[in-house]
Image (cartoon, rainbow, N blue to C red; front, side, top):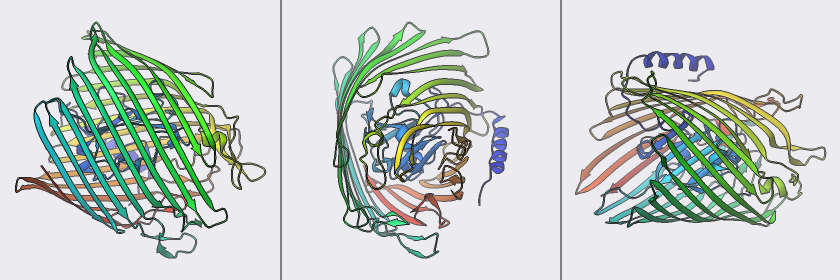
Length: 627
């Protein structure tokens, strides 16, 4: 089954009719939070279980405005290098390439994922032109005392995939810690069809061997203070098969990523203002070896970063909430291709929320939030990133929230953009300037009772980007980046949730319509759709839970995507259905779980990125045990 734009429009109208009758105002997972903009979505551990997620990428693909391609996250009309990824407030983006491979982040350690779509440089600095993904790992319990929790699981899946994982959490009064380890091996030799010949064969050199270790601890100090420390190690050796037209059957990729994160939080330092200090270290190493081919390669890239941040927040009376802080980060790259490069960035930021409650009108609360950030990088001019937000709420049986945001964001060129050495294919451009984006959002969320709980949220957005860094071939055939392009995107994002019988049945639908256009001066590309930006994305989920048995099915539709700037070639729309059934029970004082998953139920042959095949039908069986 394939959806058209008209079909999606009709479905949205039907949803709108359903919303005309009441619902409970209780919070739900994957619904838009009352306390944040309508361009923000939240996923929790309940969602990870329901959607059978193995990594952060699996979870994010279900959210409106989010596109996952080969592990990279794109938000709305922007690529992965314009999306900031935060893990416990650690910025995982590096100065070399910008983007983060989210499939390398295991879901076992994650408590919550927040997706902020739209420009967010006012709070998060450079690269937040498209938005921010905030990942919070599992933390301590609010209760004191002694408790132990341990879990183990084994997964056997198609393509000779084998996954084992264990985690152990222990709390003794003020001390709390979590230890998690995951091991993944896979041959990855699924079949694919070569488009030009129609010949079917195995996708070779697609194996992987991964070790993932995570440790987190916290200690509650006197006077409402908390000290936290965490660290992780990700080590992987994988094949690099290349693309269909340029196979690299002997190429190998290696990852050796480490990070250490420490924070200190103190409540009521003075008055009711709180203090937070945080520092972290990142050590990300990537190696690529290809001993054969037109240009044999043996490269190594070490991205190291150190950061420090101090922040205070609190309330002034009953009207004003204030937050401000300072952050410093030093990035260092040691690369066999680019050499040694460094970047320092100092930043100061502040935001204030002024709220008026119990006003004698239909709306119960009106709030205004101005925010501004000043970034001073060592290799570019300083940048101001302002933002203004307005929120209007009506609470009660009928709950209504209206929100609007206007913000300016920017992205500094990466080291790859600036300094990639001249080779047979490409060359960097040291004369690049930062990209500047202006984003506007206006959203509405409604809840009102109808046979249980129903919520509907909608968001309209406009993104304009100047000085877009675009890699394109020059007269000599070499690809080079330049600030020659402008883009304009507008669209609508909607989210619908219905729980008619408590937790027994849950129905969800998410739809994104986006028109992302090239506004450069080029006659060949002006007013053409940006590559890999579908106009329609539609996700429907259904969950049933009865007597320890849980059944979930998810339908994902992605529209046609152009693969050339002139829109002369494209990838067809695709519609993929995933499903899983699980059973949880208790025996011998242990909690047991069984789950059978089937991804791509219809065994569809489709493509997300040109030249890179996608697996067909995939089966996974998981046995879990814990106490």
